[in-house]
Image 1 (tube, rainbow, N blue to C red):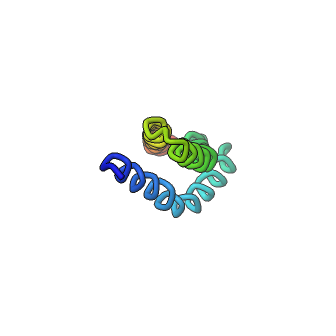
Image 2 (cartoon, rainbow, N blue to C red):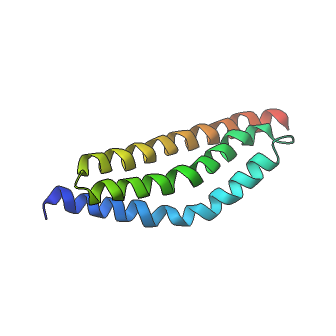
Image 3 (cartoon, rainbow, N blue to C red):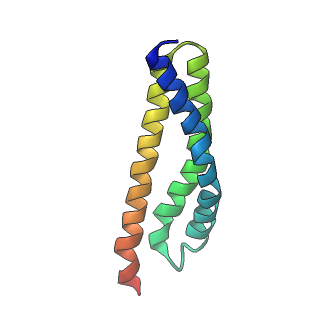
Length: 106
């Protein structure tokens, strides 16, 4: 196995297992953020991002492993990497919005 394929397997294993612990927190954020949108509209983006994580992460894991199994390593890197980066950026924007807009309502 080449070094790139070994790194890809390590990345896919980490990408599959490590975010699983975040799924519980994502469920909490999604329900709390979207459920309390009337009282705290600044949490809508954070709750929406959490809900998007619950949909996009498992799908991207499945697609990345499927691409790896088909021998398309480049597509597996792209699917998992871009999904992780986009979810991280959206989460950061949601957190920034909650922080910026939260004190203004108090």
